[in-house]
Length: 80
Image 1: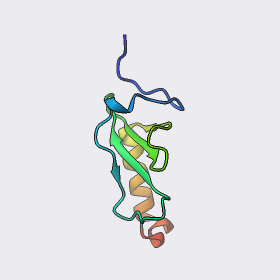
Image 2 (image 1 turned 135 degrees about the vertical axis):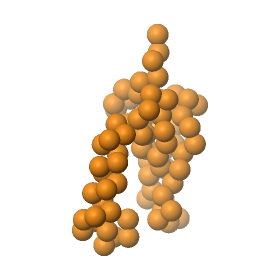
Image 3 (image 1 turned 60 degrees about the vertical axis):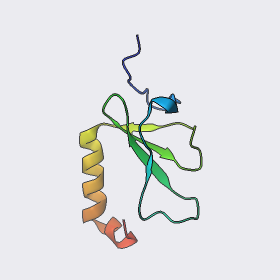
């Protein structure tokens, strides 16, 4: 039985994923990541250059903490 969980470090069936979104800060240089809501509720992150490659899943609380951290620390000087 498949509960929709995405194993860490494994390839996933990308047809099960929602819409992948690229950061509004991304430029056309190809150095981008994309995010989506995964079927199991986690946030999936992938390299936009390797659309069918591995997905790094984050628990929602971890993803929120990550976003808060990069918006409120020295990362903000990079325009994130």
